[in-house]
Structure formats: C-alpha cells, structure tokens
Length: 159
Image 1: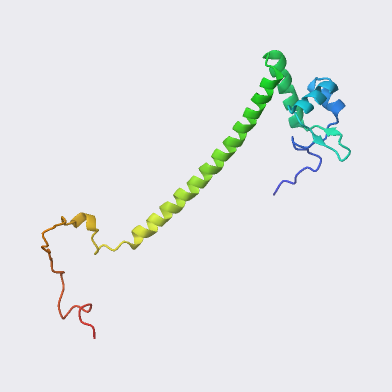
Image 2 (image 1 turned 30 degrees about the horizontal axis):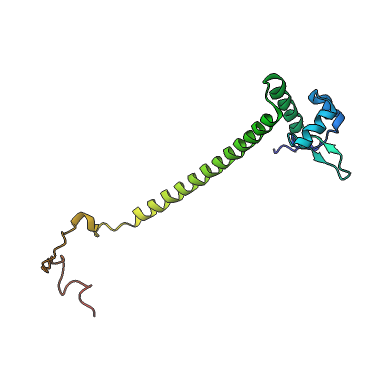
C-alpha cells in the first residue's frame, strides 16, 4: 500500500514565513534580516508584491549566520564566503554521486559487452600475439600449411 503525501506538510524550501515570524524563529531582529538580505547572506523568496517570505531552510541559514558571526567571531564577509563554499560542497557532492552512478552504469555495460564477446569467441582462431613471427627484412617469407587442406575440404572445393 503506497503512502499518500500529506498536503499540509511543507518542504524545508517552501517560502511561507513573513519577516516578523522569521525574525522570531531565528532570534534576530527584522532589520537584521533585511540587512542580511541586502548583503546576499540569506535571500528569501518574494511575493508578487515584493514581500519577503522565508523558508525553514532560510531560518536555519539565519541561525547559522548568527552563530558564525557571534560565537565564532567571523565577520559577515567571511560568513558569506563560508556559506558559498558550503553550497559549493553540497553541489559537488551531488555531482560526484551522479558521476559515480554513471561510472557504474558504464562498467556494467562494459562487463556485459565483454561477456558477450567472450561467448562469441571462436576457439579455432588463435590470436596473432600468441604465434607472432618476427618481422624479417631479408625478403624471406615463412609459410606454414593450413591443416585439412585439400579436395575434401568444402572451403577449398567450390562446387
């Protein structure tokens, strides 16, 4: 039985909180939220009337900015750089995972092709590298008769 999604459950990215609620949830003053928005530290979604709407992810980001700034003593330019790098790390992890899945698919396809080629291998044909003859520059030709040659061989007797 499949589970129905709850229509009242919001994702962490849903921009639903007005600035006063976001300020209360983050423990910051609304003016601080506006300043962080102007600096590009935390950019909330906007309504059609240009009002700010914060998501739960934005509120968590505001708390992280406050922690880095107040507890760690990092200036806001440093905080912005840290947040940019953390975002980049997340994107790169996703890209690595995507490439890992692609590599596994290519390996699987190569394994299947190799298995198919091995199943088609003719055991009466000897690879050239096993019986390679040295190259001679004197013009002497080395000849070895093929087995089963003659009139009884259907390959040599075109009727």
